[in-house]
View 1 (cartoon, helix red, strand yellow):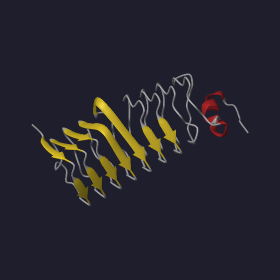
View 2 (tube, helix red, strand yellow):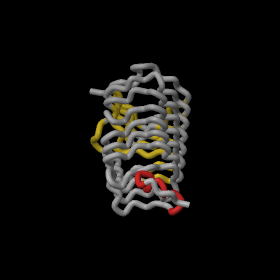
View 3 (tube, helix red, strand yellow):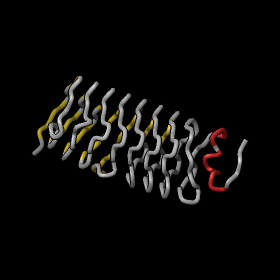
View 4 (cartoon, one colour):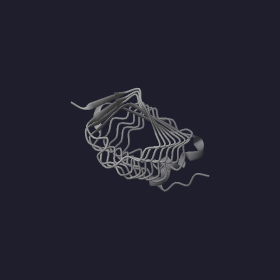
Length: 189
């Protein structure tokens, strides 16, 4: 049975490779923590918040994120594809997620606010009703994704092929509409 922690605050901690393994955290707050050396195994986060934390290159396989908020975090080159899919719910605000992978996840209703999502892998991901508010999606990959009802209206630098990505009722701004037309070699001025 995993060790259980409820309603705890963790501040300015540099976690070692296996320090968090086989633990469950509920309603906990992590501030200014460094997880870059972690090799997460069998960890559950429920109703937790991470603020100004560093996850760059962390191995987060076999982690459950159940209503988790990331604020002002560095999450570069992290693979979320092997996380626990049961009640998977995450939200990001003012985060850098460049080169991270969400391949084939069900991310319905996820929010990304003021985030850098450069070269992020959303291939085959269910992004139904996701909100990308003021995000940089340069070279993000959406091939074979379901992006129905996604709000891209305030985001920029995306290139999405409507032939390979489901976009029913997705919202785009006129200013960045060229990101949908790139495959047709059409120039929008």
